[in-house]
Image: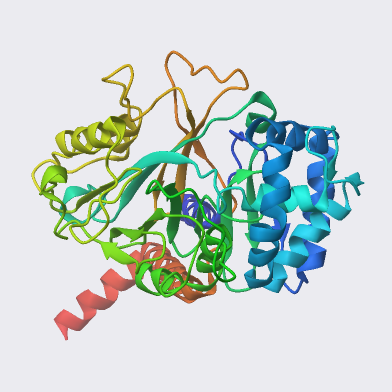
Amino acid sequence: MRKILQIIACFIIFALTLSVNASETVPIFYIDAKDKTATEIGTTLGKAIKKKWPTIEKKYDTYLAQVVEQKQFNEWLPKKIRLIIPNIDPAYQDEVRAIISTWNISHHDQIGDGYLSLNEFWLLQLIIDIGNGPNGSGFGVFGTASVLGSPIVGRNLDWLTIEELRSLQAITVYEYEQRTVVNIGFAGYVGVISGFNSDGLFVAYFNSPQGILYPPPPRAEHAVVFDLRKALETTTKISPAARIFYNKHYDSSHNILFADKKTVKVLEQPLGLNAYLRTDKSPVRIEMLWNRIHQIAVVDCFVLRGSPTNCIHSIDRYQWHRFQKLAQFNSGQSAYVNDVINIMFDTLNPYQEIFNKNTVQSMVFTPKDQKLYLYTVPLSGIHDAMPLMKEVSLMIPVSKNQTSYFSKILFIIGFLILIGIWIYGNYSFLINKIKNFKES
């Protein structure tokens, strides 16, 4: 019996420390970024990507040709791209240059010629910031509305894509000294559209157009997608992450969905105006009522009472009210992960669904245990009849902030197991001792 208990003890300790890498929904690139320069990180990543997609330059060039005309690119290069790049963290600049240095680079800025130049690669990196932001919607539960007692957050990425871009969906995992950052996006895309870190912080970008035709910036603007990456690398909670975006000027008008281990919030950042965090209790516009405790939603417009009015598209209004109708969770009926997945897959209206023909990625994330559930659109661009989110098993080391905590837990569990084994093995001895003590 003692041997059986010892085997069980070893199994429990092993199970607590085991990492399983399940089948991948999309290619996953693991980058050991500890004690590495940005150039070394980019070189390693670029080579791995090139090995996976030998014609990646042509794929990205074909995509750019579908969304940007040469004349537009020629105007953006001096008036936007070259003004934004200097405000990007130098490490990210080095990573971008290192990635493309491992590819077949062209020295001609000609979109659609089947090749990719450094300037065209920068256009790809900044396409969201300068005029082609993705749409989508998001929803989260937390507190009493979540069966976990902590957030469950969903995000749909809606984007007009072509097969070449859809084929390049990828997850990049950067393992730094302090924490691990997971970038859910596209191969070689250094900024973050959706992602999280090993401390449970989740971020997602949403376009929120105001009808402004992206005028040339009066000063050098920042790049929101690179600041989202910076937030994941340097912060663990929503408030400090949001502060990165305050008092910065961007060339896009956007919402950012945040989640950490305690709550879910939305940063509304209109073009040229101050940014504000919206909670489940924030005052919203009369036509965009919410009144849902411990639940929050985001669509491609602003809903805070003090934000500009830009919910003019019927799909935004529909999705908002659809979320409000579906958000019926409370302490008596808390949401499970599958409940949030079902909401992100909602297709009630065939023309204005939460999950629609332009949805490229649909995901649900639980910050407490860093579990990711992901659906990606097939290469054809046509959704499966029965779309399914798969749990993506990522080998994510816990951050240093959590290491000591987990070590203590494992020590306590192991200590209690060993005590149990010792007590069982010395049961007769202890009983006799107790009897002798009572008799004396």
